[in-house]
Length: 173
Image (cartoon, rainbow, N blue to C red; front, side, top):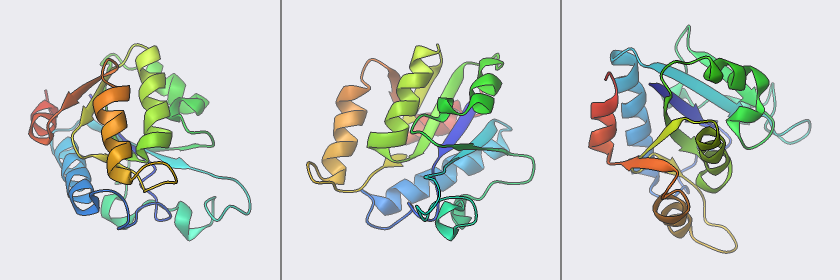
């Protein structure tokens, strides 16, 4: 299994995210569990382009210190919402024999949604642990409503939605 950690960057990790404390706690714990069980942890960063404040060299682009990659862990950079938009990431994942992909990170309604759909279309078994993706309030919905809309409705037939405890159990199997 691969644990995919999406856009956990300093410019996005913010206590205004829906259920922030739970989200951060579970994200950190899943990364630790994957490392202990020797499941691969892959990080993806979003590069919003020059003058965006979130590109190479910008503090906001850097991965949050609480979930920083360890030496040897892969880090890919994407410029569109889906992680599969990065050719190197896409080719790397296509070579994986184990097609189970646990996806965590930010933001539910942008990069997580696009990556879930792209992974599903490519034949991956997509696993979404409860409380391990989040987003902000927007002009149309609160962060909570957005989270529930995607996790409980939009992805219903695309993912294996599991409890946090089930996700911990799955790592290392």
